Length: 80
Image (cartoon, rainbow, N blue to C red; front, side, top):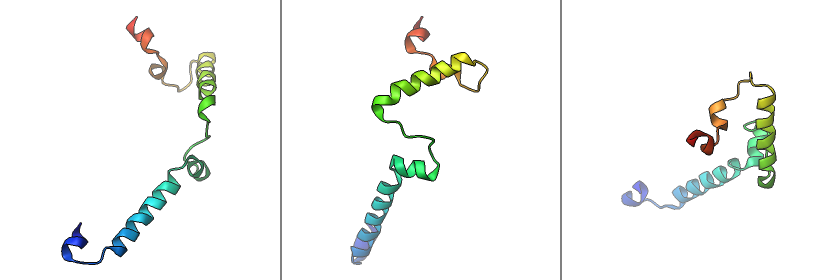
């Protein structure tokens, strides 16, 4: 730590670091991301499978969409 080597008091540096930690903690939450428009929706983990099934089903109903097909291939399909 530069301040420690120079003999300066660390209280101000520690407070700045704690503020950065608080800001990161607040802004890394899913609710903050949704309110800020970074994500479209928050899905609870137990419901994630249903969302994946709906996504895959919608692709197969309309295969000319912009969906990346290679991302939906299962490993067992790739192996043959």
